[in-house]
Image (cartoon, rainbow, N blue to C red; front, side, top):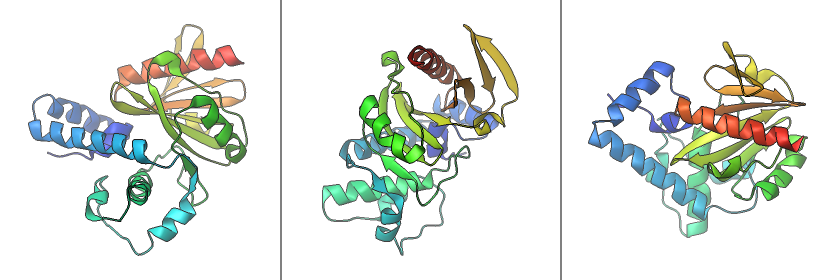
Length: 230
């Protein structure tokens, strides 16, 4: 049995499939190689990607006429373009456009940033999102890999233990609508479903990623850091 490893990394597989994928990785060398290949690709693209915001409308124009019906994260393998910068941009576009985060639908006006400085990235995101997100460092738990945003929301990507975890922020309660459980930890009330969410002032947060234990580590680090900034 094979899984969409991109969804596994993003924590968007169905809960049962997520568990089966984790079990498969314990003994299946091919599955391990596939996941490791995806991780190497993501790291390479982020390292080479441009450091300025790149509008998806422009990417769509570049990629016009390119179609692939397969819903995997490996479409980049089929295309070759001259120049490392161009290759990085197009590979990043193909990979990112293939990601579908149900918590904030991808729009043509959305902008993605490949910056890894929390303060600089928060500043860049503010104008588009319409609010100032906190510049979270997660107290060294992971490294910031970039973000995407549009009017009303921002999503920051962190590499933690070799896997990507998303922290989405909004000014409304939409992120918490699918949560089914309430858990209080260290003075903070969390809403739990596929991800782990909470409210702090006017901002609502949601952490998503492949492993529940690490989601909690990220959520608690982010929640306490954000609270200290209020």
